[in-house]
Amino acid sequence: MLEIEAKFAVEDLESVRTELGRQGMRMERRQQERDVYYNAPHRDFGETDEALRVRYDDTGVAMTYKGPKIRVGSAKAREEFNLAVADGETLEAILSRLGFRRTATVSKVREFYEMGDVTVTLDDVEGLGTFAEIEILTEENKEDAADRIGAIAKELGVDGPPVYTSYLEMLLSKQQ
Image (spheres, rainbow, N blue to C red):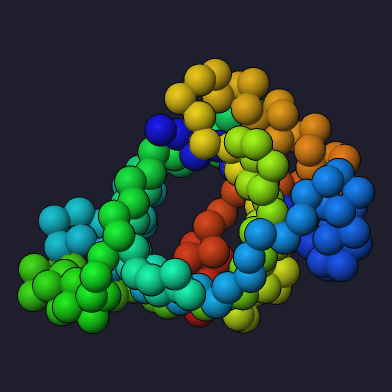
């Protein structure tokens, strides 16, 4: 499964919320997320453009691996694997014992809006600002999905330049 998404910096989340309502999308849920990122002992995920995270949110804990980003028009795609975890602290201890190093923690409040195969999230990311992400999960034509994302962004009024860097990359860049 490929995750095709585009992220945009947004100054006024309320106007995006209003437009989402006009498009028939209602907020499904709002939650706190704390993402703890790790780097591997055998290769540098920063160099290979991969990510390994443990996410704590209102629904539980999950471990996610993300493969390198692929540019698809104005969007990006990457392979993603998610695994629900019963005990995040034990998982983090195992990763540490295996030589994985904690890289950074990204904290945010995220609102989810869904319609069909499209998910729009509005994020307030600690230390970085506010963003809108438009995502389609597909095994089909990634170019078609990217075109759809571009059209949705335009309808929502978030058609500024897409942000290709991840929240982790932005946070690490800001810390340097």
